[in-house]
Image 1 (cartoon, rainbow, N blue to C red):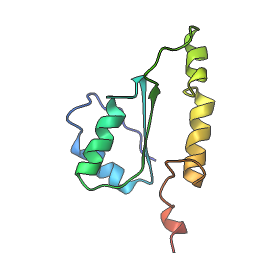
Image 2: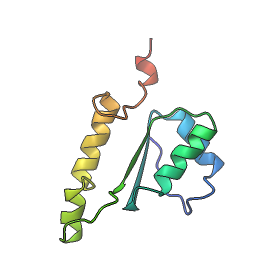
Image 3: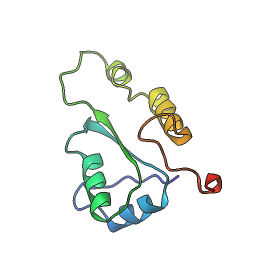
Length: 108
């Protein structure tokens, strides 16, 4: 697993593309709206570079959200720690889309 904290959205660093090509799945997570965020940019850059690693973009939906404190809002949109961990686990197991590529040791 590789964790990257990019300092900017564009241009996407070549190192991000290189690392993503070697991983089973790319998960982007931002505290802003998904549409037009870092995940969208990373997905576009990967495709332009011919990298087919699955990408899941986590962030706020592009709609008005119910009022509440930060933890309630994040839980309501599936961005709390437990929901994120559960989703990634399911993607690694291949039971949630986008599913991660098979682990190299599992490939035949």
